[in-house]
Amino acid sequence: MLKEPITTSVFDLFKIGPGPSSSHTIGPMKAAFDFLQRAKALPESLLTEPLQIKIHLYGSLSATGKGHGTDRAVMAGLLGWLPDTCEPTAFTALLKNTDDTYPISIQAKPITLTAKSIIFERSRYDSPHPNTLVFKLICNGLIISEEEYYSVGGGFIQRKGEEDIRAAANKVPAFPFSTMDELIEQLAKNKLSLTDLMIANEMALTGLTRKEIYQKIDDILETMHKAVKRGLRHKGVLPGSIKLRRKAPVLYEQAKSHASATDSFMVFLNAYCMAASEENAAGNIVVTAPTSGASGVIPGITYLLRNHYHYDKQKLREGMLAAAAVGFLIKHNASISGAEMGCMGEIGSASAMAAAMLAYCAGRSIETVEAAAEIAIEHHLGMTCDPIGGYVQIPCIERNAMGAIKAYNAYLLASSGNTGYQKISLDSVIKVMRATGKDMSKKYKETSQAGLALSATEC
Image 1 (cartoon, rainbow, N blue to C red):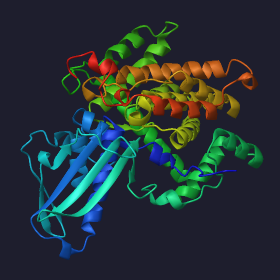
Image 2: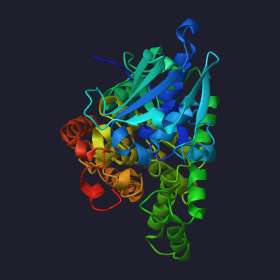
Image 3: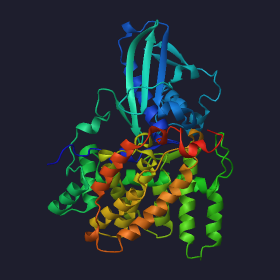
Image 4: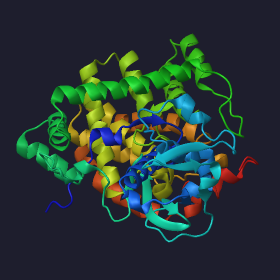
């Protein structure tokens, strides 16, 4: 019997915003913005000067928040900025100097925000999620409003006491499903293509028309491909203490100079994925796919499909919907959060989504789409999230390229035989993924306390 059907929108999964981490930048910015709106709705009689806002960051937000720009993201949200509309240059300029001040007002009452308003709590915190933020509005030394938020991966947030902060959560999809088996059953029972089912559900959840949905997918793809193009042009050193040099432009030149080689398409694909991922590491505008840390895999794959396979706009739209279906299943039944699942939740999810996209765009059956996604996840199980210095650079950037190559190979393996012989289902491997994430030490889940993070002095 179907329980808790997926009610996530395609445009919640694929979100435009600044890098380098959806859990650490996009989520906290949205949480801060939400707190600001709630504070503005308070009765004016409660607001007695002087007013202060204090923000406490816990878990992985505390451990690697500086490197990921969480403090900037929180400040941006309190200034009334949102991820998809904030100007990246202005965003990266926030808190450049620790003595900078940022005035805001609530009910015409002034508040001055500084770097000291944001407190990185190293102490243990008993919370439902490792990415926790607590906002406090203080009047005359007394807390008059306090809200707790969880940044649950991919820029999604939850407020304590609410299951889901999205207003669309109460909507009902036209063809509900919560597992791959239920999705396949819906397709067979209603004689629908995966594209038509995903469009019907999106229309029911968002009220958008088919034309509007396709236009929004086109905008997402355009933003992804702009990130690839920028990354192929931009040279030099990425921000942060690692001083990592960009590699994508060099790879791209190598690929062009050896275009006739049998493996040149792999070099092109590596260049495209790393270009978008390097743009994310620089804090520029990317698309969560499904997270910012994994925002190079699907842009690289779709850029390859458009420019080398010459797939048309409609085929890419349909591929994005297939990728979204797999992303929904992982988010619903495991997690896409690096703080919960390690890197298998980010690159593993992106690779599975890309493998499904490749199979669907090639006209394969839904069973092959499932097999491709399963194989991709299977070979990311247990992958740690251990960024050096807390920056989404090493090993994150190269992992985006590797995730795309694995996705391509997963598609080839799934297409090479009878899918009826496949022993492991997508639903089964997602369950294993969830259990593996729960069993992993938190040292290997986005805290930079173990693994590669300890192999360099930058940490």
